[in-house]
Length: 130
Image (cartoon, rainbow, N blue to C red):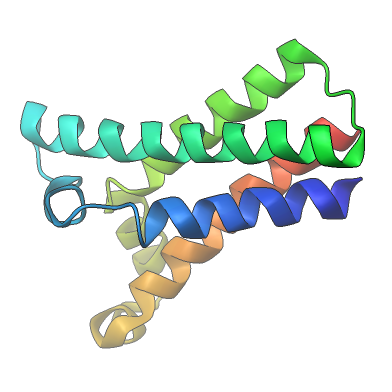
């Protein structure tokens, strides 16, 4: 069940992060103040909605019985962790701490960002499949 849930959450992540993320969200989600938070949270809500939809479809198609409260907690975790990571400063801070400034300057931040998102999805999948 873990692999099925993790795969659905990963596909949900890809759908929400690429075809459903607007230019406005991508360009403004890390800005300071309310404008940045509005763009960031609307993007995070998209992640929650897509992942929730895929979990419901997966449960129906595969005969799962996901407990409601853990499923809601997992979706809250997905939204909150995604919003946190997408503020960009956590990735920048990590790359500075890990002495990856050169890699960050050459496109590495996008890879660290996606790795952090996938790690958060794995936590959600582990909690749902336990």
